[in-house]
Image (cartoon, rainbow, N blue to C red; front, top):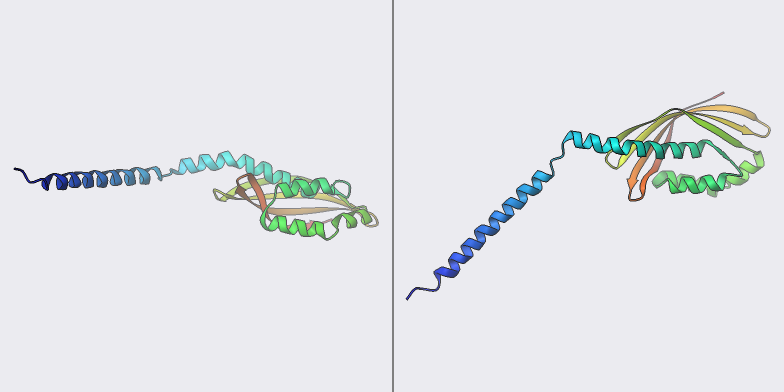
Length: 175
């Protein structure tokens, strides 16, 4: 009579070889799928570039045009488009009675983006927009002055879209 032991060992050996083969095949397929070509990265970022540019334009426009009557509307728009440091600083500015100051001085502002925003990506989820802007600021008692800025706006991607994260004024000149 044949010994029953060789059969389970042979079955175990076959199962072990099949498991090992499956693991190797899975690893090879998984690693192969992680190869991203530069063209794919460029295409993905190019597709996002117009969205980032549109968001940067909305943020900059909201910062340039204000008066006491439209401050609440501007506040809601900017908070919806912001996160991080930019949001914290803007909320602090609003909390420090910006509306009262604007009403007292009858201050208002209108501005235009003169150049840009030019967008570049630091990563797939972080972009920088540079823009040159001109702003006309009017206040009771001090007249009107033009202010020229170069702004650097950093935007990050979150589940709801691109948001302003930091704002830097790289250069400013008044006339």
